[in-house]
Length: 143
Image (tube, rainbow, N blue to C red):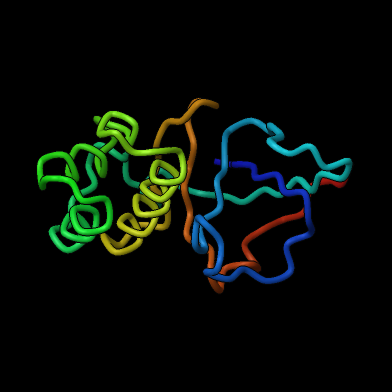
């Protein structure tokens, strides 16, 4: 299936320095989340077997990292990792919730998948760690 990512800047190289690490967010439809006057629309192909549903994520080391980073109990960390809860449900803020999305993408990769299929305010989202995978992106258009 073809999925889409929009960016206010041209993507030449992906790094791990941002809030989402090397994860990019894709959707089935093109949508823009920037105030920039220029928007780059990228696509990539992904197969059903390439992604794991957020509800199936589980890794003891990842859960331990969530516990330590967000100072929550193990059950709460599991619920955030598998999407049953958000960070807000545990008194955390937006940046913590975005961090959880990053961790979901990283956990999917650790479990052998290319992407995590999750849900956010835009609907279905594919969280994809992209470090070293820039060649998989196709520039569709620039507006």
